[in-house]
Image (tube, rainbow, N blue to C red; front, side, top):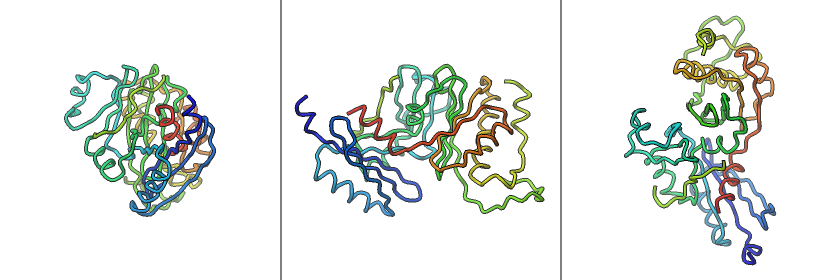
Length: 287
């Protein structure tokens, strides 16, 4: 206990989208005493920064998150369920949560992330959603990022459906008079324990409405991804969704809440979501 009082560990989290984003936090007695956010254009810059911090403080923990389509969720920990879904066990690594459900990613994805950075902790993006999810009954969560929209649906405290939509960069201008349709592991610690339909609805979701001039491209993509996920979920026999929660990393206008409720008729909330802080939060709980 005395030793812990004098230790001031650094927790470094990072991820890559258009550039590398990093957060360095230092704690003393569980109190934040230093915080620094950095952005890097190259892998070399990121690695050099991490090495500099690690060399000055041996109690440095580096963590990152998987931001790709090579991951998912299965509402079971039974390997037979993976086989039923056509997921080849020899090509993936999965972690079981509370003996009830599991997150998985490909071994290739793990190797790609670890060969250069050698993180102490590596998390699937769905684990970050899971740790922050407060409502877990017939609730759809969508985490927005620059590259992907990640969707996780809960029923009776278990994530039963997931989907990942890649953001395609398009310069299509939305006009009121436009009537055309838009065309569309190595030695890494992976957290293994976190404390813890109606036909009419399907028909409504199938209708693709033109975006209004008030909708931004980001809002339009989010709404369409939600509708597509709901359509597939209902077709698979899922229960009616009672609530939508947008975990926002892009500063989406709060007006999207009204747009979704007017179009899909489901109560919606928008919450700020800090990927880097959430990564460090989970790492701190497991050191």
